Image (cartoon, rainbow, N blue to C red; front, side, top):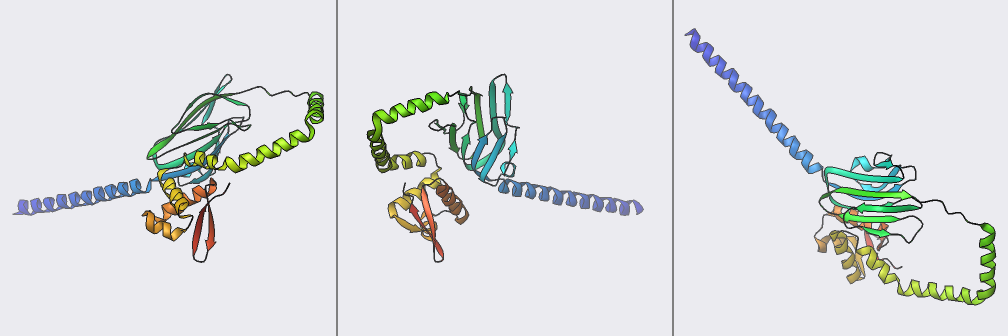
Length: 259
């Protein structure tokens, strides 16, 4: 009799322990699912690489590590060659765009990143890129060239000679050239910029371009896009100078940015 009572008591104890373990396992799985949902990242970054190897991050992102970050963690130097390596590894981004500016006098040896464009028209080289549903991976090898020595007297003398020879004709030629570029080159500038935005932003841009003038509420209705994602992508297009946004009553009015 006593043995039966003890046996039933042990069975009840085992069942309670198994029930508690099942609850703990369920909570753990639920927590993992929540973390997976919350780990959806996006980024619209401006990355500035300094001559001493420090890297500054600015822009719009929910990836906390990049928020207002300044670090030398991503750069290393072997003799004269610098290596910049930014890799979020297993942290994937639904969409990202970056504009990376190298130090003054930088000379690129090697670049590896998604959908890149390299602009060498200014004093500092700019590299832009974008991708979707992937980690951010940027690898750049470069070195810093020597400082240019300028003889001031030679420059002044040469400038005076040019001024005397060309005079008014040079001035007029520059005015005409500037007017021609601003009038005929604006469309090409817009095309170059639109090539380097994600699919949602292209969809927004071409809809606004087709309509000429459209409210943000109309975009939300016709493009079937979540409100938060629509607002974030509109702000990104405004920052790049592709569209303009003005407040009108209870909504925002969007137009194509005129160059």
